[in-house]
Length: 294
Image (cartoon, rainbow, N blue to C red; front, side):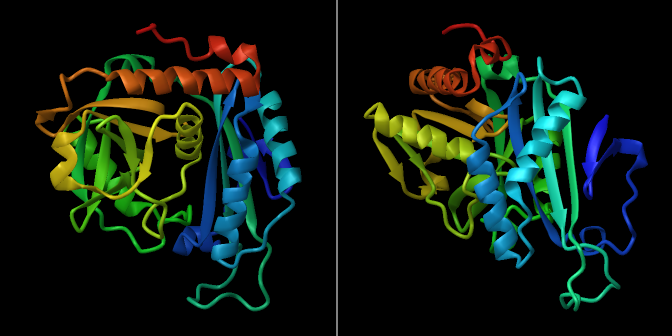
């Protein structure tokens, strides 16, 4: 695998991270994940805007994002991913400095690391739907920043794995927040309901794509808290994400959602999302995520 590290393309095994890097010591940095369909990134402007915001919120220097986008395109080519489903991972830390809680003075040069790797879309799960569990949300109060410190998400995700679930849905004070790595939506009385973006919610790119599509299709949208006690009343549940795309949820813990099968509105949104991807990335992407028609 060829990666990008601090201005150079190199084999992944040649990368050397300093033990004094603040990303290693403190998780002092941010990351971003971008989906690529047959060599074409999907909504890169939205992802780089979110990266810029995360960097700014943590008072990290913002690099030339146009240059980083060019780097991402080059990585897809160098790793022979122009005819494959792929995921780009970008990570920027505050850089190398002696261990101290305060910001280094003078500021060090940020550490920039980018990879591109093939992924296998979850075709079976898109068709059948998945099980999720509910877990307490123990994260910090700036979940709107895509920061490196993901231990609460990791613990929640591991708990889901151990219980045979695909995702863990985080609950704070009786309110559904989001998944460990996804956004959460419910269908109530024919309307798509999802928590509003606050400091407790990450502004998901796929979430925004789906909300905009719903508005254009005159599907009612309510950005309003979903209370845990109301979750069993949902006609449908779905989770959204960069690599998750539009995923039906058919089981929460031990109870079924609706009739235990993906619902009609979820199926419609899956088709709509696929149409948007194909329109924006080219028809080559159509072959990359074929799923049975419903």
